[in-house]
Structures are given as structure tokens and as C-alpha cells.
Length: 282
Image (cartoon, rainbow, N blue to C red; front, side):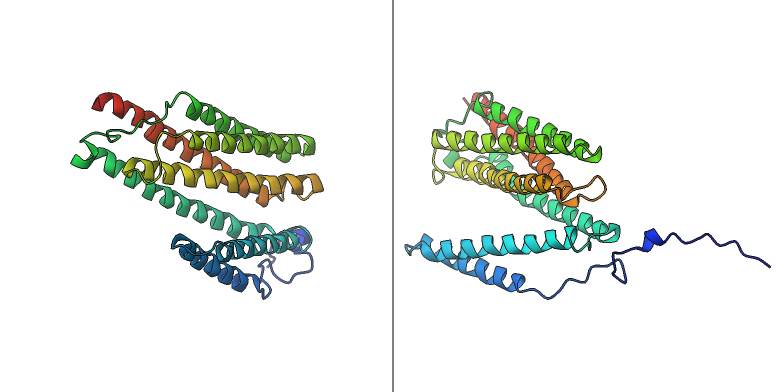
């Protein structure tokens, strides 16, 4: 009796000197320093909001940023030089990023819930209309529409960079990422200008509160995403990414597309629908 045995492909089980495909993370101080810094930042923020100094909050923020830098530096070293991020590990990284984005969806869902709850059931204090009487929202087809075009264009340029990477076109990758980072900075600059010219303040009622919370946290995500892509640009220039090994860039692209989609909901629900509500109420 004979049995056919398929020859083993050694390269399929080549984990660059590691005995198994799983990455057992080395002991690290960064989770401890990160949690302590976040605690100092939160306590400092509360103290500052109650009339205290700002240096405690700033100290905590610096600690958080420093921890993020050295922690992700170690992750890059593990991926590029330690060769720990093999296909098996990358599956876990993909699931982790997908779950993170899902949690972000729930985060923004809370803001939309607050906005629509007030909009669909305006109280007598609001004048029975939405937006409340005395609130003059932005024209959606002025600066908000320009920002929409900027962000959608950035979604196409990051896709261009991704396709260039898959095709081994390093020049196209760098060009696409450069344009995307520039567009992200343009979006942030336009939103800062918009905020500085708003006809209402954050504490002037439910509409300003929900408007600034939703659009402001989205703006924070744009800044984070722009930073994420800028780091990917530096790594692309250094040659860290290959057509088959580039999850760091792929995660940044996922995050950026998520930011694009959230903005579309914000534009339709808060900018466009909000201005339409004024016309109906009046």
C-alpha cells in the first residue's frame, strides 16, 4: 500500500528563524507609561476646567504622545526588521483594525443620535423648530461643500497610492501619499477658518453643542489620519512597504476611507439637512 504525499514547501513554513507563526510580544513598559500619562492628562484637564493651571494637562499629553511614538516605533521595528508580521499575524492585525473602526462607528453614532433626537423633537425652548430660533447655520454649498470635494479627492489619491504600491510603483506611492497628506491639511485649515467665522458658540444651545462635537471630533480624526498617512509617507520613502507586506499603509487607508464616509453623513445630516430645516421652520 502506497500513499501519495505532497512535497512540503519549506518556504511556506519559513518564519525567519522563529519556531511558530505567532508573535509573542516582549515585555514592555509602554502600556504602563501610556496609562499613567493618560491619567495625568485627564486629571489635569479636569483641574484646568475648574480654574487650575494647564501645565499638568500638557505634561500628560506630552507623555501620551511620547508613549505613542516609542510604542509604534517598536511595532515598526518588529514588522520591518524583526519579520514578526507574517501572514498569520497580519490576519490578527486586520481583525484588530476592523474592530477598532467598528468602535469608531459606534462613537459617531452617539453624536448623530444626540443630533437627531433634538432635531426630530424640538422643544418649546428651541421655538419648536430645528435649528432653534436665532441659530444661523452655515450654507452647505459654500465652504462645507469645498471641504467635501477636498476629502473625497483625498480618498481617490490614497487609493491611487495603494494601487501604485500593489504594482511595485514606489514613485506613484510616494506621490499619492504626498497629495493625500496635503489635502488632509487643506481640509483642517478650511475647517479651522469655518469655526472662526461661526455665527454661534459652543455653549449657545443644543445645536451648537451637537454641531461642534460631531464636526470637531471628525476634524480630530482627520488630523489623526493625516498624521497616520504622513508616517506612512516617511516609511514609503524609506522603503518599508512591499506589494505583499504593507499592512501599516493598508490600515491607514482603511482609516482614511472611514473618515471620508463619516464626513458624507455629517455633510448631509448637519450641513445640508440643517439648512433645509431653517427654511421649513421659517
